[in-house]
Amino acid sequence: MNRAHRLTVLLFTLAMVTSACGDDSPATTPGTSPPATTEAPATTEAPATTEAPATTEAPATTEALPPDAHPITGVSWSAVLPPAGAVAVYRVDDFGLEGDFEARMEYGVDFAGGIYDRFVLGTAEPGNDALTFYFDLSEPWVVGFVGLEVYSTTNDTGPQQVERFEEIARFDLRLEFGETQVVEGVVKGDFGWGEMSAGIKVEMTIRAGVEPVTVAAGTFEGVTIVEVVLGDEFIGGEFALEYVLHPEQGLIRVTGMYVEVELVGSWS
Image 1 (cartoon, rainbow, N blue to C red):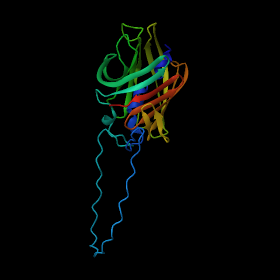
Image 2: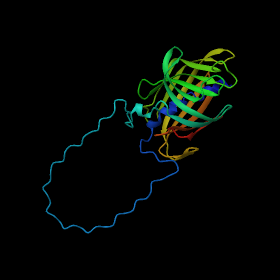
Image 3: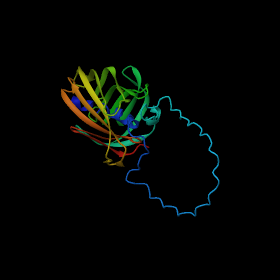
Image 4: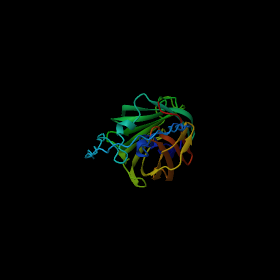
């Protein structure tokens, strides 16, 4: 497999958990629109009454935000992470990894000598095609990317490929729209044929989506766009990806060179 392949999807879960960074208005049910309301008939105007003396208006109260609220949307960090046991289905076409894969989050999993949370795409066992991404999600709205594993039907002894950052790469999801964060680090990889270590650079920009986006699971409004450019020695050039996020369903689409991912079955 192309070693750049797996780095093209290193932000897969990052995109998923940034769902609340965009428009936090109520989600539109895919393929439907609210029914029109019937206007109530006009009523006979009541006779004028003597106006009561004005009262002093009570000051408006400010609703307290949760301690892990996003600074722009006010959405709770814990509220956007899929609960344990929730699943979705994604259609993947990514350098030979093709088909529909069940996705889920698992919390408190051992990896590289630490305990982290991981996003699983497929069945993460030898002899299956699957991807797993490990994260430190302990700080609200900061995603620490730790590493990933690749499983393959051609390897029945363990992961076919393992990559991890020398130091956890932390992505700050509290960016203003249009602002870019640059994260640089060193990735260590075990590719089956040998090990290597090289630098990588990730540029992440979050933008407000304007038009509705249609994928296999339906049409979604109020999306957020996350633009990612991967580069430096590990990639051997530059690789651009666009992630489309929805306030309720998280990641609904990824597009880039040789990469197509879309939501087929909504989270439930």
